[in-house]
Length: 326
Image 1: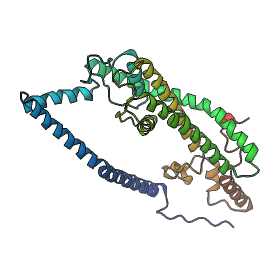
Image 2 (image 1 turned 45 degrees about the vertical axis):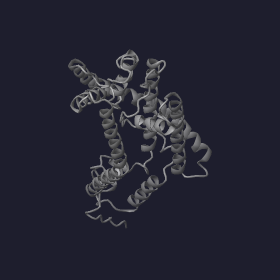
Image 3 (image 1 turned 90 degrees about the vertical axis):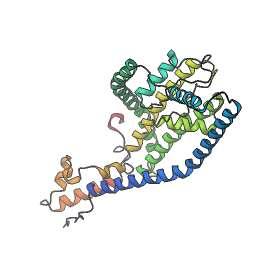
């Protein structure tokens, strides 16, 4: 006779969600503490250097008053925050050339949003709002469609691994190997190699700066402190911007593919633990029938054991997406 499982009132989706929320707050506090200790001294050193340079400038140019210098610096900073540089501004290429405009449009619809170049006019700001409203969903649909198509060869690779290694390893370990292969492709093709390319093309970037830029961009964080093609005198800047746009779109799509492969492994999809609905309220008819306490007997016990065995050790056919099964 199968005895009912007594669940603690503290063991539920609501409790797990509260634990997750507390963990998130603790993670934010940890990040704030570490960033403050790491970056705080560097900021103070930079500020001290700037104050020293300002004082030296006023000593070297006594005809310039401190208030006039302050006004000039405010205008320069205001313009720089909106993508207008006062350094070599006469000979520099415009921010709203066709190549730069394509690059800006891609950062809007992909939600990267570097923020180094922004619309200055009210009409431009209004158009940016409308453009983003329609462009962001369109980009999500396009990337999702591309991911669905890329899942076909990806699943064929999983089936090949199951055929070759299924008699040696459990399906879960084969899927881990499959995921590791996809992650290695992502890191190699869209982080390590592009970082080497950017480090060779950007005069002021080292490899760490370029790798940092690639990661910040592909994760759509988009801090905007490193932008490719903005160095004065950059050769073929419009083409450079267009190629960077292609890299961002392809890289984001492959990143979404990697996340899809990751979430397709039930044992790794920890987000299911924090869903609002539990097994008792699921819409799966089989689970609803199995969780009814009034049903007992050998048949019910065998079904429970069979379902538990399937959940613990899925077969290669079960772990393969439906659309890619032969």
